Length: 228
Image (cartoon, rainbow, N blue to C red; front, side, top):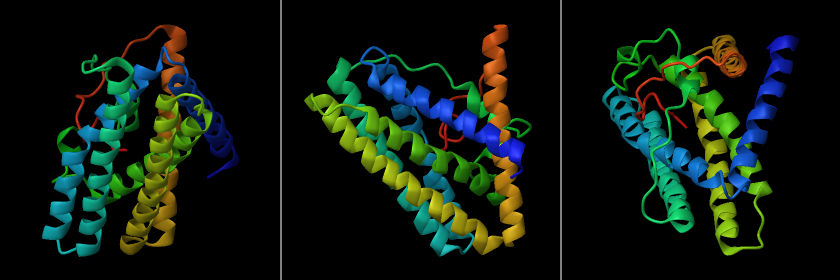
């Protein structure tokens, strides 16, 4: 990673973490943040399950086990967010708008090429590694800003801390998975490529906000809404 990319990553990740922490701390914005997180986590479960089955069929038992565990974690995370959301606003809530970030992050990849039975493993592992690594830091920061003075916030804080630890483990197995299949130079190149894609997506979103541009997001499902 060159110095420009490094600095841009610090700025973008810092802003993203700050916004995530702000949205989860403010009681007015917390429900929407919880709803978006629940949708992303629960929606990704079938995707990871399908990837696990594919890895098993291809003879990679190690990866199949890791992906199955990842799917189970995502299901548990979804339940944590859903429970917190239910405690805050009751049984019903509005489905959040589609997140344009993933459309930009996965730009130039067709919907067909991103399905679990067709996606290139290097694309999945590289893109997911970046998302999991950053999610672990963002969610930990979200947990840190929550007060322990009321029961709802205290319970959510514990849940987020648990999720952050899972994300660290996910990033670790994805990195190892790349090392098992590729040379270290290739791993480094892929990680740099997806880090650059992430930064470009953030910058595009920022410019769109400034210019008042609205983009069409990809369909909201486990493969394309969020892989985290």
